[in-house]
Every structure is written in C-alpha cells, then in structure tokens.
Image (cartoon, rainbow over all chains, first blue to last red; front, top):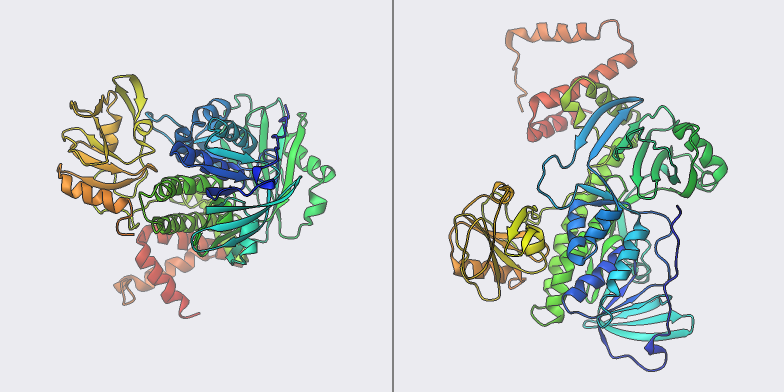
Length: 535
Length: 62
C-alpha cells in the first residue's frame, strides 16, 4: 500500500510578532539527521528550534538500508525497536555475474546482538517516527515546519538567521547553527564553501515497485541481490532490496549516455522493470534517475555553524554510507554540543567533531569511490580487470573478495582521535562497542542499552571498577556492592571484551581507553582527555 | 621487492612456460589471461607494500 503523506501542522512562530531571545541551538533541516540531532540534544536537556522549509516527510523511499550501528544509535534515541518491528531485517548479500551466483556474504553470522546487520525501512517512516519522538519533548524541541531559512550571518559567538514563513519573514539568533539541510545545503551555498571530490558519469535508475509476488522467489527471504551484467537488463549492473509493505527497491545502471528526463518516465521505466520482473503485476511507487558524486567540505565546523550529514559530505549509495554516516555524525556531535552548551566543556571540543567525523567521511568516501570504480570501469583496461575478477571468482575464493558492489556501512575507528588514550585490550581504543545480552537486577538487558549516552567505566570479569568522580560504573560477569552488575549468562560479553579489563566508554558508544589495572588516577586522566581537556 | 635475479637457472624455463600458456590464444584472450595472472600473482605475493613497490617499478618504465 502506498504511504499516506500527512502534512505536519504549521503555526506562526513567536518571532513574527516580537523578537525571540537568543536560542542555544537552531537546527536547519528536519530530515532524519536534523530530527535525530534534536532528539539527541533533548535527551541531554538541551533546547533546540528545528526549521524546515517543507511540511511532509521525505517524498520517495530514499535512504532505506539502516546499519546495525545506526540502529543501536536509534535505540538510544528511542525509535530503534519501532524500526526493527516495521522494517525488513536482512544480513545476506548475493552477487551474480550474469544469471550465475558467484559469491555471497553473511554480515552477522553470530548470535547475541539486539540489532541485525541491516534493517530496510523507507526514509519516510524513519522521519515519521523521529517527528513523533521529537513531540515527546514539547518543552525542549520546537518544530517549525514551513519555516525556510533565507539568509544567515555568522559571528564568532552566535549566528543571525532570516526565516521566511507563510505569514512573512522574521529573524532569529542562536549560539549554534546546525546545518542538516542535505546534499544541496543552502547554508553551504550561502557561505560559498567549496564542496569537492569525485563525480561519476554513469546514470542510475532507482525505482520502488509494490508487488505481491516476491522477486526473491517463493521463500521471499529478504537479502541484497546484486548483478554484474544482469541477464534481464542491457546495462552493467542491477540491485534488488526488499522494503516493508511489499515494496521492492530496484537500481539499474543506465550508463553515461543517458537522457535523465526521458528515462524517468513510466513509458521507459515500466518495460525495463518488466524484463526483470516478468509478467507478475506490479505498481510503480517511486522512481528517480540520478548521477552521484563523492564530495566533502574541507571543514565541518565554521565558528558557530556546524555541518552534519549530507550537507557536510556525500557518497554514492552503494554501501549505504550516506544516511548511516550522517546518524553517526549526530551521535558524535550530540554529547559534545550538550557539554559545551551546559558549560561543561570549552567550545574547542566541537573541533574534535570535525576531526573525528572528517576521518569517518574520508573512510566512507574511499569505500564508496572504490565500489563505484569497480561497478563503472572508466577505461577498457579497468573493464578487463573487473571482468577477469568476476571470471576468477567462480573458481577461486581470493577473487570473490575483490568483487565490490559496495562495502556496507561499518562504524569507523576513532583510534587516531586526540580524545583517545592508547592501550591494548580485546576491543581497542577507538572501536565502536559490540553489543551483548546481559541479565541484571531488573531482568534481561543489553550491554549497549546500559552504557550508551554517557561516559561509563565498564568492568568485565575479574577486575573491580574503582571510583572516579563523575563517572558511571557498571560490572559484567562479576558482583560488587557499589555499582550495578550484570550476569554475562551466555558468555558473549567476555568473549567480546575479555576478562580482567576496564573499558572507558564514550557517550557515543566508542571505547576511549582500556586498563588492566584499577588505577583510578590513570582512568581520571583518560576521562579528562576524552572530555576534551587537551582539545 | 626483488628485482635482482630470483629465478636462477630456471629463468628460460619459466619464460617458455609463460609463452606456452598464451599459445593459440587471440590477442584479446591473451590480454584476459594476463589480467587474471596479475590478480593471481598479487594474491600469491599477498603483501600490499611489496605489491605497491612492484606496481610503481613497472609503471616507471611506461
């Protein structure tokens, strides 16, 4: 069934009639990134105003593949379970060359995780859930639809904005301006900031179809199917995903010599889809013909203007690194911005967002550009090597790993960040946490649920967590009367974290220091460093 | 990276075997075989730093 778009209500903002006091945070853009930012800040008691020029959720499914790490962040924000319930869970990818399967991968072969490798869910549902979640914080989140920012002027300690509404313009002042206004960011354009990288010439058709008969066959096991030289399409590649509501996502590579206007019509698209789907009836739900690029801003922080998500960096869609990368930006920035707004950290802490997520953006762009180069060879010799990889892959395991139809989103390591303290343990500083099932005084739980959101000292197995001022402690696989302890009943936590280690965990679910001795002075030093004392 | 002789007395033999591997193939088929060989040898070497040095040394003569 097609998604029913319900407009969000507009009400005239107070700034139309009287000047508003300066706001701590204004978020520009109510897409998945802007809304996540507002919810993250609200959970930390920080007020924000969210401005959006539109008043409905995303038109078309757009971002659909939400990675495990993103789901864990959404769990903290309060919509993860809803996404899991509605979305389509998958973890296996199959790659075909012609009609023949040459390689498949399982992204999460082991049990003991709350969230799967991937959940497919249309961006409009994610935005709907986030808007409803934001409405849980009426005193902290001020959602203003049909409020279009037409100008802004940055100062060293605040930003002035001009906003257009159906009732005319008004002005706002804010300590922090968070630009979540997407790939075409008007904020970025007004500031005339270079957005540089690699452009790809190939056109792709993206289409959502609703159908009762599953293109995955009788069992309808949702997976990610990718074809090189598909037998049903006169082009280099094709991709198939399942979404909720019997909607299937199809990507067809069209080549560089394509007229996007002529291609994005039902007359052209329906016959192409029929070649793939056969005679089974389907309804075309949404389509788009696009080219893509990998590009980023040199700096994500410009005094009090901070770029988050696609406004800061864009990648090709193969690998699901756009939306997932943006949610990780939010996770990284949220606790830092809250600490600065509350006066617990200096504004220079925000610079570490630029360093850490700039590193993440580079990693995402590198993976995405390599996948795109593999899928769209630029010269006869690139095509020759690509084809020979596919030929070798049917016989030899080493070549299967070289097939690149997108390396799917993984959290990037923060190992080289100035906030980390070097050390050695099964999970090293800079790594994203790995979930594990636990049992505590209040029943079953998950490691991530217990530790995400604030700095935590986690003691695993045969070691006690010393008291460090301002730091929460929890124990796993041990008992202690001064802090909460959990039973590692399936042994997953100790398999993943070892025994006899202390882990200092960041609010964004990354390890920032590890210890094999309960040295409270060393832990306090690492804690100060992680909060930006050296930044 | 080894650019001094590493094949010893077997050099002529290896060269002849490489030519034999190409015998009877069209030029296009031979190019494909070479591409497969490069990929297989890269996996055989298995060391990214050594491979990078080899790629650079080969490129320097282009």
